[in-house]
Length: 367
Length: 241
Image (tube, rainbow over all chains, first blue to last red; front, side, top):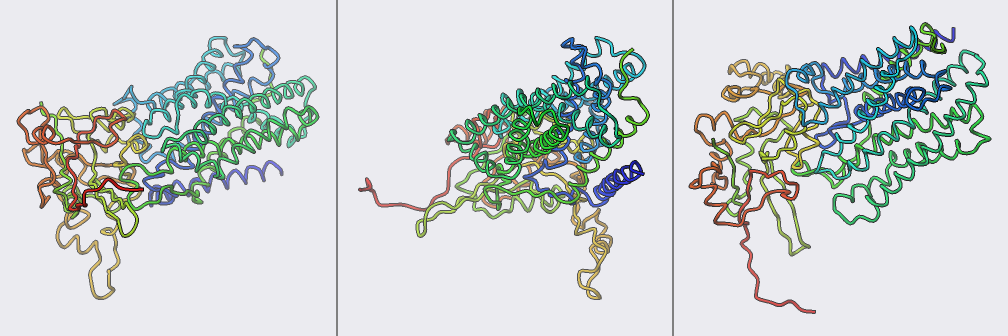
């Protein structure tokens, strides 16, 4: 009965997404809260969030092979499957961001190697193939060392190339490459851990399964690393705010000062970093299931807001002739259709995960 | 091979927007999209105020960030230096819009020329619908459709792709001037070849002190601005405390 309600809810999310897809096809992107100034909005921010979370999960899944910590093998299969699910969800959001997604064939027919976007498309395609192969290998026997290392390397490549994508925009210095090259992999890692903890604990809770002491210790260890990493991200984030927002006098950086008061900035700071860091560094809270669930959920919500904040900080000040007849800063509030895109991506992830949980023995240990 | 550029003489420009209007009709530009536009700025405190007007268009940068960033080469450079776009290859990622420092690239968020797709009469019982009117004059989507545009580019760009000024490459190819240059009543726009030392653009660039937009970014724009219009004068003064 519980499962039917769950599948029904996911079906509703997917239905909302399909209706949005149809509306985009017939009416165009007017269903989004778009302007030529805000050319990238919530669907792209969600794509970045999901794709980086998937890369973060890749870091976690490669721990047994890259770092040689064999005790992490018990969560390896679930992590790889989650990587796959989240990556599919990111593709859903990306497709609904692109104006003409069917033309991606030109990535092959007319490649531009100077474009970070081309590299991202290529790397994520390779990444997808590697994950599918790795999962199949893990499902039938054990992940090979080569594949495990490849997953780790591709996760570094994808997360840092996303930094290049943003940072190449010289006219928008707020999308600072040197900052993002560190910030993206680090936040990817912390999101990966949060997603794994949240999905694993929620699965155990809803299926009334007892968590073994061995696994519980592992989750506590992960939660501690998550808290420490959230703290590191917080330090990086605060320095970005100070250097880019408070101490800089450059005209372009006034946008950042403007963003510091925004909802997305504060959600990222308080929910995405401070709260999970404090909760997971307090041992009495960390060892509880609810503590880990609250911290992980809070971190993921905060990081999604953070991806939005990052994009907006580069776009809210209109450039060049786009400034004609517009205020110094434009405002953004997502439309209902954009929220449906997020729900669509999330529902797809959860549906794939639910199917995997039911039929693919995600708890299985390697042979 | 030519290397085309434009000089805009701000002393001659009166801000009549003839360039923008003629560009729209020449290139079948849809509402909400501006291949040729302007920046206006009011400075000073009343009663000492002044109104500035700066015509804008794609700068056809030599180091075009939009071209470097386009994943499918939809945005590309022609041999003559014009930054060109291919709608067929455009995936609608809008990375060029994010990369362009000048804000001159627009996206077709919906089907273009939506007014002319209307099936209801503007005045019921009084006028025909836009679709009927268009059909009556034999237009393609809209009555004033210019078929020459489709010689080198999509005649009308579809929903889901970007578009921008092409220096009227289809006209330049036939030895004609870009439409905005031809239609300027004040001859404020001067078009020519930078590789020809005797061209008018080179004469003007050499004679006056030109500036280009956001030169510090290293994009090497091909639109040069010269002079400035000011009819004002002031009595000689050293100011005071």
